[in-house]
Length: 276
Ligand code: KIV
Image (tube, rainbow, N blue to C red; front, side, top):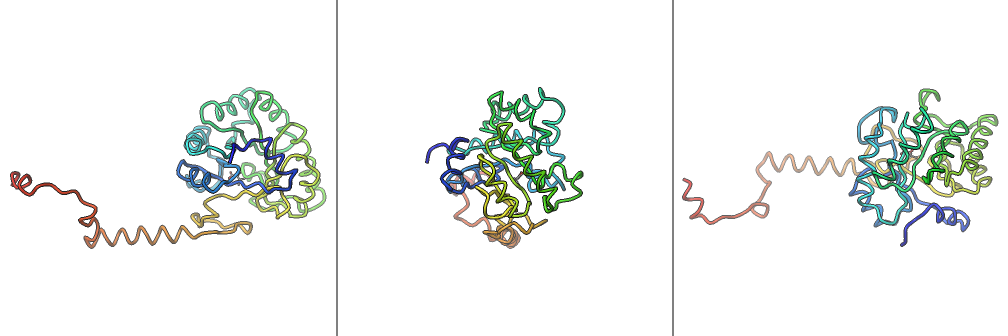
C-alpha cells in the first residue's frame, strides 16, 4: 500500500471506493490501524472524553492535541494523518489559526487538520489552505458547539436546517477543503450532500451513502462504556476483556501465583548465600 493522500481520497470517491477513517490517539493503535490498512487516522479531540475524562471536547488544548498527534505520527506510515484543531485554536484570529494549524504539520507530523464549522470559518479555512495545509471540514453535530446546539442531538432534520448544512458544505468545498465529516445528520440528507459535493463526505451517524465512514476507536472496540450512541457498532468488548485480565492479575498477585519461576531471574545459590 502506498501513502494515502488527499488527492487519492478524491479519486476513491470518483471510483465509488469507500474511505475508512478511525480515530487514533497513540503509537500502538496507529501501528494496528496501519496493519489493518485504514485509509485515514484522525487524532480527534474526542480524546478529551475517551482518554482524558472530560465531559466534552471543549477543555482540550493545543498541547494535548500536539502530544497525541506526535505519538500517532510515530506509528503511521501509509495512512493520511489528520489532526483536530481544538476549541479556540482557530476562532481568535486568522494569523493564530494558521500558526496553530502549521504546528500540527511542522511539530507533530500530521498531513492535514480538521476544523468544525460552516461558512463562518470559510475565510480561516482558505487562509490555512493558502499556507499549504490541507483542511477537512466537519458539519452537522459539531461537538465543540455543544453549548450552542443545546446537546448532542441529530442536526438538519427539517428543510431549513438541512439547507443550512448543504449550503455550509458547498461553502467549505468552495473554500478548498479536501473532505467533510458529516456527524449525526439524517441518512437522506447525507446522501443528498454527498451527491452534490465533489469532495468526499465521511459519515458518523450519517447513514451508508457517505463516501466514507469514521468511528471513535474506543466505541468500536467497546472500551468506553460511558455513552453508546445509536450510530456506534461495537466490533469487540475490550472493556470486559480488560476487566477480566486485570481481575485475574489481582487475584494471582494476592494469592502468590504471580510471578512464577518462569517470570523470575536466577543467581548461584553460593552467591546469595554470602549475603546471609
Ligand atoms: O473528535 C473526533 O473524534 C471527531 C470524529 C468523531 C469525527 O471529530
